[in-house]
Image 1 (cartoon, helix red, strand yellow):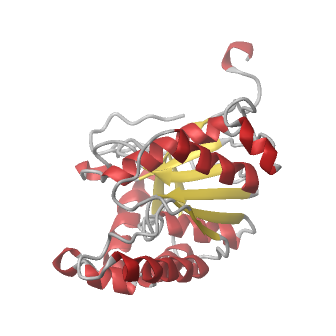
Image 2 (cartoon, rainbow, N blue to C red; image 1 turned 30 degrees about the horizontal axis):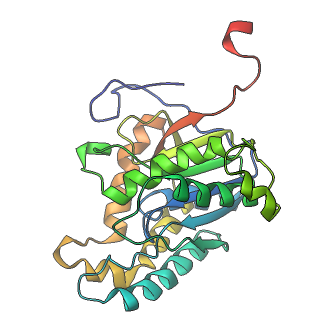
Length: 263
């Protein structure tokens, strides 16, 4: 895998490899409704258009995300917007875990919940968000994002070990060690990319547009989805040698073919 040394996460003159697409099922795990829509949804649109099945797992309902709206009202609203945004990119399975927005804690309970979903959906690819303090372009990451990203990476391994959370077997969920890639969006050191030029980007924009009430609730901190997502995708495109791309830090959990010492 390629690792970039450029502080901004994009190496001048460096072309990243495309994420392999010889797989069928993906699970995208995020802390809040709208997290997936800030770029990753465009990649999802490409994948579903190619016949792949993508499911969403949201750790919270985003109930603390709108300052002018009580959580009892914001949660259902944001859940509805997430389901609408998912439909725009060909996703019809959207699940929520009901951890408390803003105070998600890393630990066995969260990992178990994510492992449960991985064992049920049996994905080959898991997508999540950056778990570092700083994200791409030096943006400071939010607490829930960091916790969920790291828990997802760990859960992808846990899912294949029958002695970690053995109680899940009582639910009929046998170990699933078939996750090949954990793809981290928003990382400052991307290793791979997904070409989202054209229709995938357009569908990704429509997906974020579905979060209209949330975006409006941001007030002065909000922005127009088309302008932002087009800028971000075109900023990533040159790293892949295309017009527009979503860049990912890819963790490969299993060797593709013989390990290096046997080649």
